[in-house]
Image (cartoon, rainbow, N blue to C red):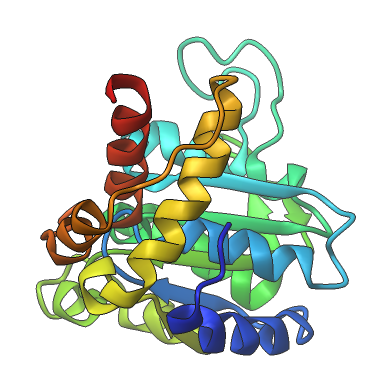
Amino acid sequence: YKITPAIEPIYLNAAKVAQTDEVTVLILGDSGTGKENLAKYIHNNSIRKDKPYITVNCSAFNDQLLESRLFGYKKGAFTGADKDTQGLFELANEGTIFLDEIGDMSMNAQAKVLRALQEGKITRVGAEKDISVDVRVIAATNKDLLKEVDEKNFRLDLYHRLGVIIIHVPSLNERRDDVPSLVDHFLEIVAADYGQPKKEVDPKAMEALKNYNWTGNIRELRNVVERLIILS
């Protein structure tokens, strides 16, 4: 991931945070701003870097499926549970788990995540025995979690437990001077992916890219560069 001047201070702070090992981190920012890249950077600069790093998108699963995914399940816990299965918290033991889009997590799953953070214990779905886990949690969301708390969609105690360190990743529209550097970066890596020589961008075209309204942020910019490489 390209560390541009506007976000270099964020990554410098993230490197400091990484050394604290067990401190939870909450990354806030719009979709496509690079929150997952920052989470991976924190893991890679921590003493857990040689241990598992596991990502789960909390918005991609329904309530029951997310719980069984995160905490595992006991054989017979539900239809299709034909064997005891480890969850992602167990698989991430001694490493890091990145909970993306945590604002979409159900209240029931939130309670279990809070317990894992406070007590270092989880319980598989359908089981009674506790399992101890040593996992660093990094969470991210594009939602206003305090608003979600007011609307009874998110636990206040979990918000405070996650937000020991809060990092805000600015949108691309908030750092337009980074656009040329990012375009150059994507020109290089996308051209390499397609086995093509790196192309240049006309100055007027670059100015248009800088002034564009990037609602999809860096993810959208990369897609535009890819289209330009294919079609131009």
